[in-house]
Length: 164
Image (cartoon, rainbow, N blue to C red; front, side):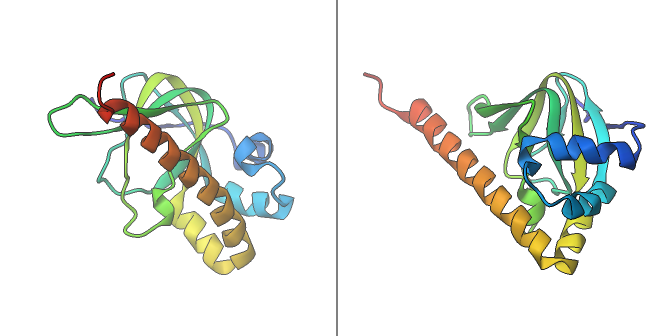
């Protein structure tokens, strides 16, 4: 099914309070939010669409405002394995931050989803210009990566554990 990526009409000025309220940016210096809003846009996805596909170029990350997204991995001769289901308040995507900037998972829309997309190239440029901002974002993403790796480990234990 083709990707559904629709940009909203919300102005950048009105995105700043939305970014500030998202748990991922909780406590972030307001000056950094002003920098980040220039990289942000409203998006909407329909059920069944894939937002990201494993192995494709990673160019954005998403602050989920509403809806549900299944984070999946593929295994040979098996149906996709759902690692985690992301919902309001979660973020999707950290691969835009680490070369070679390729997605590590698939993300399939389960319910109609609204999100804020943040452009990875724009963010990397702002982080290069402001290392304090870059360090703050890296700390936040390191927490997300740790959570995802733990979720993957638990899911794989469940899938591959011997039957009792």
